[in-house]
Length: 147
Image (cartoon, rainbow, N blue to C red; front, side, top):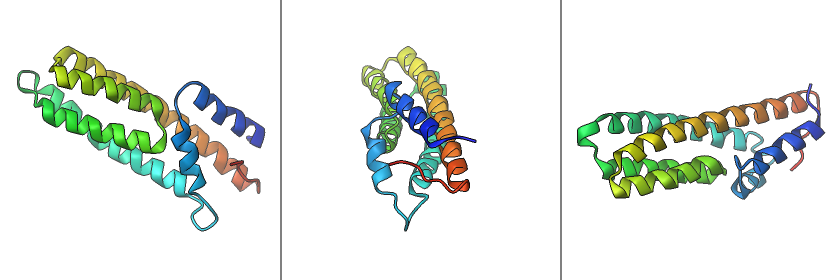
């Protein structure tokens, strides 16, 4: 069973480690009694969208000798925007580096960036899942999460 103090400490650590930025706080402010699952729903949509984008990027980058850098850049731009909208700062940062490699048509940089994005995405997804599990247990016990 998690305490509110543990939730606050965990959330704070996500900001300190650069997983989240202030945009996540802004997202939380949009959640209220009329829409208590707003943040979980938005982040879940991000996960679904990101999975599709990562699969498309994998396919595009897999065309080693025939990479459409404009298409790759557009996909990365989309991922950057959606990660930015939920405050997933580390994913957003890797997307910026990836876009630079696309502009340079640097295939090795694009390969490396794709691996970096997949790693950061997996990490942030795990962090969000833990955060939501903590909140769920606190709510189930009759508590409320601090805002």
